[in-house]
Length: 474
Image (cartoon, rainbow, N blue to C red; front, side, top):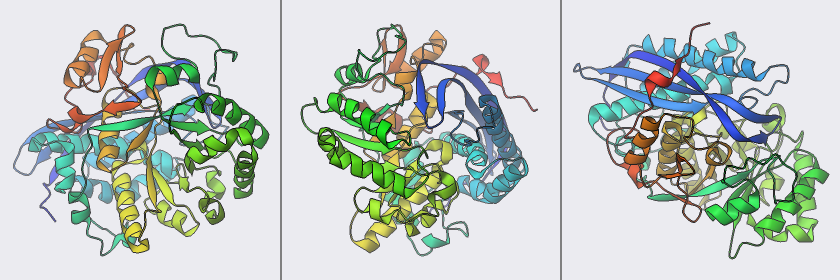
């Protein structure tokens, strides 16, 4: 293994700013119209005395990490702030270690302290998910190297530990060295549960000149990849999918889709019934053929207790919300799950380790049955978007769910200087249109070459820190 630099985390600063959606986004049990975005800034000190700063950002989405209906959205936001506060204390008191070493050292304590505050593991891991990215960004800047070089050379110090005994004997260094970032990636457009499909659908028109209906999205952005939300009611889901198919089937050539259950089904039987009904509908044949996997359709309380092998034999079933610990994918594999999602809000090291598992299991099976997907949580343009894209591209994932650019009016709420800084630094990824800097989509693709150049974790620009609100202690 390459000698990973050791360092201390001297400071962790926590901030947030509000994000307002231009149109409502319904997933699972919530219709999202606004949420804070969290920002982290860290300072590290290497053993030779060098210091560097790093940064990360992530939306605080309600009713995804913890879907307890008794909790308000504000309760959910405060849970995520608490996860950040716990991680800040652990990392700044954590002594000297490698980037991965800091993560591994605090993993169990983070979950334990979170549980003491009533936080489930998915919520608790939100704190390290941001701080680890900021720490790695700082390391990249200290070494004057881009993210992909630091990971491929394993200067982060990623290794097999007692947290991942199933990877014992796996050549992590060789796996990491074989990763290659791409210059572009397909954007998989999310169709939310209240999104208008055609202009005839009743909806509160935004009228800002940007696409609102699925028809407009397809014609404007040229997507060929889609993520379709289902809501746990077979009749209603099939009826909505028929309306979606009536639009997607107009696309010339092949299109691809995924089904996202967001834990809305109580059992595998309900999901199988949905799939059987879909296959039986003449108007859904092309859409069914387009589906490449089904994402977390079963409530997390039952997902890892039920065998999904029969459905996975028809379409791979993958984990998302149930991927709340480092061994969740290993448990899921035993129940017939064939894949797992990468989400930066769940942790970048988890994504890397799960991708390594896919490589190992596929080598043993002699095929590519185990897959990893790249999913969004209304990720916002700027730091969060760029770090997520850089990670999933390096992991070899060729398409990624992207929805933040559709539900939020780009960088319109940010200061002119911050918008221009990101546009100047990453002109392949952003453009200026409709009065703001926003994501640039070309034929349904995102061009991301600029994310792989320059020191740091995928960003040659920074937020306007003076415009952010510090996250106060309770």
